Length: 339
Image 1 (cartoon, helix red, strand yellow):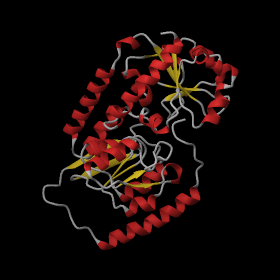
Image 2 (spheres, one colour):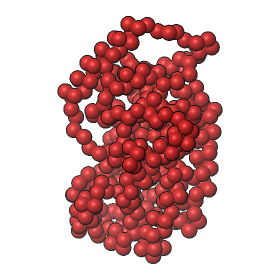
Image 3 (cartoon, one colour):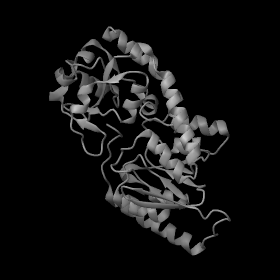
Image 4 (cartoon, helix red, strand yellow):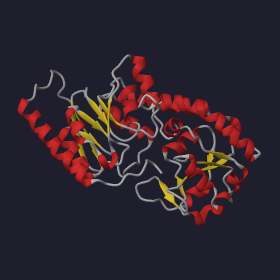
């Protein structure tokens, strides 16, 4: 489960679209103040939904999906708006690493707005962005066609919710006119991940699984960011994962509970649950409970929702925040595994 499932509400989107159209018309009527001298350089980025042309240095950035707000902040620009993420936010209403970084700089916190199938395009238009970043998101073609009329918009390279962490940072850096700084961020993160490796984890295999409800079972692939975060600590993805067929647009495979026995070679199982009730339902299933790592209790299943989110993303703000919190959970699971 990548994000909490929401049902499409096309009537709501249509209403917001109509409102946003009025806002855009108003902006056009006010006229353009013109580009500043020396801002004529144009960057072109082609993605799955179209092509974005960014002229000059973006100053009013809006972010959708995951990870883009963090990278923009690390590159020196606090977004004016970002998609809300209530499932992973703390009592401030923000993802904790975002709140910490912005308040530390003495900056203004981004305005949050509804995303996903209920994307609040009216609020986005009101924010008057000059760049919309959504390289790791589920933006649809219909939504993109609206957003690209508001500001240059960058979606995912090929499939929704699918991009490597370094490509995301590189793409955002290019869009912001800060490719050199972005390359430095990538190098710094790689160094952090390399330094985080623990020799005692060598040879320990794991699978990162998820469910969409009782009777289901899915596995994330090695390139998925939450798997890459765990792998960086020195663990090895169970080779069986690569034998499964990808579920389009998910960077994972929904293999079905009937194939749970194929995970018998995984020393550890990583997963997460939306709440304790769901966890009890999933763990009560005989086929799931029979997975050797699950039977031993060798499961890394954090219950803190901000940590679940932070450990699912590799970006300049989450890596230092999540790595220090991960090791105690893994060590506890290894003790159950007898490693």
